[in-house]
Amino acid sequence: MTAVPHPRTDAPPAPASPAAPASARAQRGARRSLAAALVLGAAGAALALLCSRQTWAHGTATVVGGTLPLSVKGGDVTGAPAALAIVGLASLFAVFAVRRAGRVFVAALLALSGVGTVVAGVLGARDHGALDDKAAEASGHAAATVHAFSATAWPWVSTGAGALLLVAGVLALLHGRRWPAMSGRYERGGAAPRPRAPRRALDPDRPEDLWKAIDRGEDPTGER
Image (cartoon, rainbow, N blue to C red; front, side):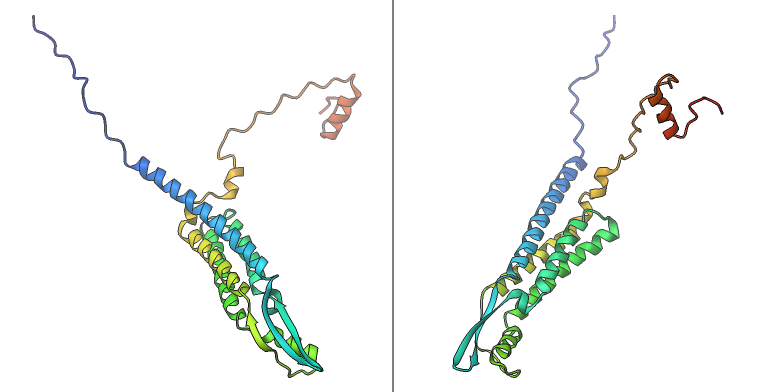
């Protein structure tokens, strides 16, 4: 009697698909870039707004009887950092509300807000205009200028805030296409519609049922 050969059960397992680990790495990278952009963008916008309320420069004006110390805040020197911080913050959150070309546009706007804040900070550190205006007002001479001009560190802090906005914008440009969209959370995505509760039969002896039927535009008498 011939023995029937049994099938081998020690066959090597099928190799795992390399697509799964690559997809997991891509998702982790997207989450990290998203978190970094949110933190950097929000911090940059908040810091730029804070800097606009701080003292940027000191100086002295010559007046009758001696000299008068003067100082100006960032908002007196330039309003660009505060305005661009608001634009950058709005662009940061708008990235999640749009898709495709719209996402690229707002990401670029975020990056440009950072560039503008950097430029405004650098120029503001050397700007005498606001102090000269105060000197002219204090002395009563339109041609008066400020003396002993000195800038504080706040214009350069504002420059750093712009750099944070710029980095957030670059991250959004490079990785934003893989970030989730805010609108997607509120879409049913083809899910089956929720079944409606069956309507209770109209009871002619209940006045409230008659009124509800009239409110729905139905004929409570049942006539058609």
